[in-house]
Length: 466
Ligand SMILES: [Zn+2]
Image 1 (cartoon, rainbow, N blue to C red):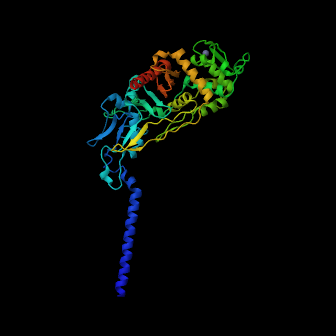
Image 2 (cartoon, rainbow, N blue to C red):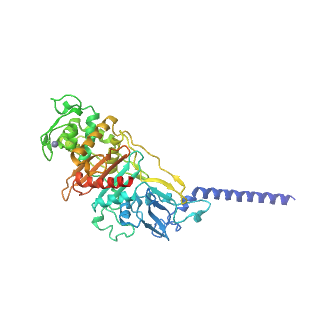
Image 3 (tube, rainbow, N blue to C red):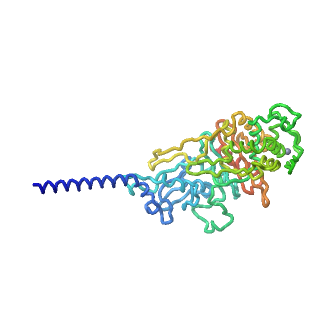
């Protein structure tokens, strides 16, 4: 009897240990199953070339941009849409590290712990991007083979409607010499997120903002004048001399109001303002405007701009004031700054993702709208908004654009080849809260060439709304 009792006790202990082991196993599975499942060695998810074989990516209107069919990841049938959406959607091998395919792999996989591998199908989850494929294609066509980037977004919601980076390549027919051919230099970078460039005159609103917000007076520039800086009458003689050098304008602009100084893009006036304000104030406003900040877009961090003006001599500070000294700005940061002007001081941070849905169409997640710090005071934003709108009327021509816009161009001469150029601004119709930026390497003139790309995207946008 004693023996039976002791054997029963032993069996009970073994049984208890067995159940404890089962519980531990289930707990470990529950905690780690998703990570085990996503391992790159899982051939149910990835091909031998590490191509994700589940998950769908569409544009904001449900147009399928990338999906898996019969074990192969494919793209849209239209080559313009394939190339223009490449940097947002991604290449099959995820060499474009900022793309949805590279940064949202886990989101594209539909995983149900109880079903395990059986829950995987080719459709997977769907990342619904905020971009409109037709707007992207219009931007690509307008860039016309030149390298650069174009972006248009809704500064209230943060949704990016168009985002193109060139050079691009066809993900259905990847060139074999992609990494050797100089024509594809930097092809894996999305220039909107990951590059910086000399801003030239698109920086001038920052200097004007510094003058407005720092309480600068008209008499600071000319002792014969009185009153606030908004009442200044600045006389451009075509050159302004500092003890150690000079800054020139392409022509003599004569006497100008504050608005005319921006419309004429008068280098003398902006160099004079920057030197009068001093390096510390100018540096402070460049920081305040977010131009040295990095923004987080989904899982991507943008590259911050850099400005080296502390302690520089006057004429170099003057050059920095017209955006030409060692100034480097990121296109995304510049876009958010112009959006903040449009929106009274702050703007939504851009985002390329509209929502995530499962294969049955159920909503899984929608990104929160995040807003920038106050980049410009509401009062200065209003003055800048009016000046930029007047800039379009006086300089660029309102008729070139399908809707009212406020904007500034920048053209930066290069030692060889055509100038690099910018066009940044926003629409002025309250029902169209959109800001845009265009940057083209060796693109020519900011007002003409970069402005034409902005006009093409805005035309496609207004056509799609009617
Ligand atoms: Zn001038």
